Image (tube, helix red, strand yellow):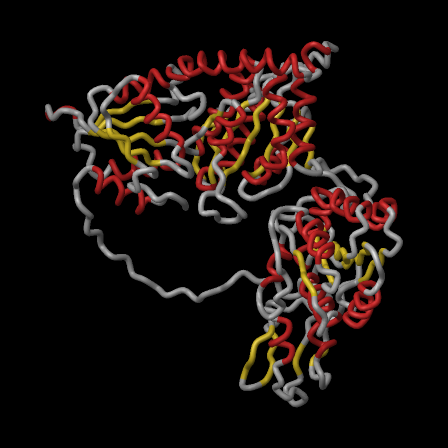
Length: 610
């Protein structure tokens, strides 16, 4: 054993490696991304690691490995579970041979997601057991236990972390390489009665799953990470109140109790919210008058305790989100948990020393200076000026095209949806020029089927692929169009243009968006063609390239018209003494401002042409 200072996601990865994982597949999504990246970086040479094309593919690849007796892990964020749910729902009915852990990172807040979803609720819906760590150290140990549990009961299991565990840091003890578990996969053995899902098999296995989960409730009541603790019992005061919590909220609860642990109180930690440890809950509830449930996001523990009370005729008042004692939405914090606890325990609001407040500047999220997506949006906007349009966006950096002054994102739903939404609008409104923007990584993950749908159903729309040669939003991971894998293999690139032409699109143009006039003219021409057509704006992400030169404003030529600032919204462009000024520390020399300046007052940049 040795000690390392690890991020939560790194700890999960190192725990999986220590557990002898053979295959890890996933799709990048904050706050889950670092798990797979760490496995790839710390790979002892025995693990197949891949960024799959999407979460559904990752789930199915991991299932194939688990069918073969290997230990497999699949990683994603909470909205990625929606994509992976189709195979997962059936996989629970079929079962697995090797241990299979589905690591899902939930994002209360949300900090960087479309939705607040609680994987604990999905676990109940899908009947899949779920492990819920409360700290970095526990995540490291618990993921190893999750593999053992999965293997023993032949079921995939969820490993559900939240942002504050995923991205928290702790110095923890981890195993040396010689202490790692070794998993020898025996390979896939044909057995159609087990691996081929038919209604008869599903009916039989459904009954077995329900029976197993009832039994697991008792088993998990003895799982040591589900625990009861008592505070303030030495003074002889009777225990009448309890708090039930989990995950990072449990740590907040402990921290707050640390300030005054003499109040008579019983604390329940729920590390496996499904199947719920009912026998442990009964011991917790014994003699209590009321319980406060502190959890995020759904009232999972609260509902479970209400069910236990109803089933066993207990007159314990259960409080939490359903009673308004805890916020119904949003992330818990030390402050919000402390206030709820103080109110519940009748301690009143504590007066805490005020910390000095320094007003911070408001900085809305914007596209980076020099981002080629800005040039792409600007070209489309200028090309379509005066026409009735809809611009359907997607999930990625380019969602920020909605910000002023670009204002080029009218809809954004989920990955790949913009392509089909544009078709729906176009079928009912023939006068509207319909555009759908999609990134290169998202095109492979969720966009291809939408293009097929549009071609087959005779849609009239323009697809704009924003190809910056990486998965920029989540940290520049490779994808099928980059020509390399996460394991460092150099592979043949999948050509977006060839894919589109193979589908049947007759018009597919590839343009550098930083060549403004060519980009604008291409859009004007292509948008007038009937049917579904595509423009690929290809220019690498500025975070992946070095500027060849930086633009400068000639103050004597500048007339202070502010066109560059007013129309582009580039953070490198500001007004100084009535003239445009370029911040040299931000400029990448993309030259877009140079090309639109009406008096030629800007120069010195150099377009990035890959």
